[in-house]
Length: 199
Image (cartoon, rainbow, N blue to C red):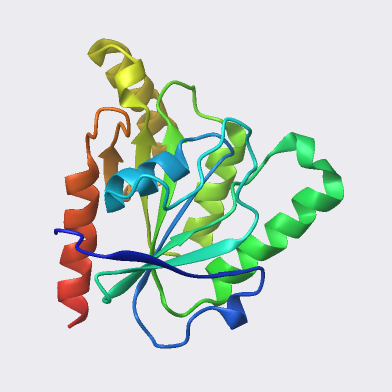
């Protein structure tokens, strides 16, 4: 898929105020500092489309971008940012959960995991919650350029084995590096496939 246009549409804290034109939505989520904004900018080939920050917890709204006038890319707040304080975390959790559970236009949720780290409890719990809630999702391992091939395989295998403890069948898995522009075509190809199947 070639992205010809990517435009910011609206930011919200309430899923009911999101666009109502019925276009399919592909949302991106992950723990704070997982490289979500960089990935979105790489996928859309727009440097400043999503705001990147060295400070975690920057995205606090549901951000909609219309792609090729055909589907929405949705940038969701990161989860589990400890320095937000209990009240702040609770507020973000409500925004995320209500969007994921109630948004009928949500077609696939891409969950980003940092390939450099061991399986984190917060990620595993989130993935299991998605499964229990029957939300269609895919996994994207980010920052693969930061590791040797051997170490990357080791880390991913550890993750996959951990997931197999609770999952019979795993969702699609992608590998990306925003810095080296790797993996974007595969992610967009997957979105393209789903869009074609919806027609």
